[in-house]
Length: 88
Image (cartoon, rainbow, N blue to C red; front, side, top):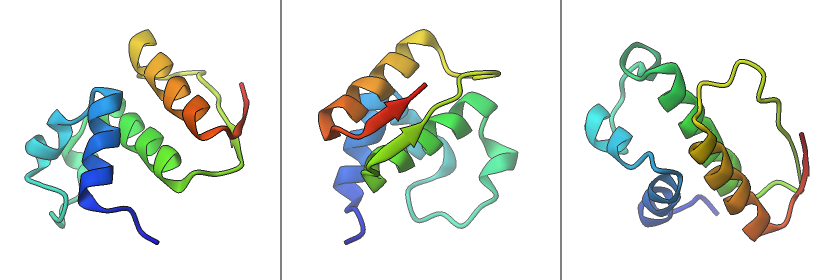
């Protein structure tokens, strides 16, 4: 089942990216996010998608990452909660 808006907002908040939703105008906005969001914000949304998808295996390459150390740690913490195999 698709995640609810509440679940999406909770994950974004846990990652420290809940302000992104306000910045773009909500969850149901049909806009080109590449033109609006910074590279770090785009990566944060990608991390949220991974957490919400709950995959069994996640390959993470931090080379060229625009995320802060705190954001990376939050992401890895959320992944640990759902117990996938993480390959860095």
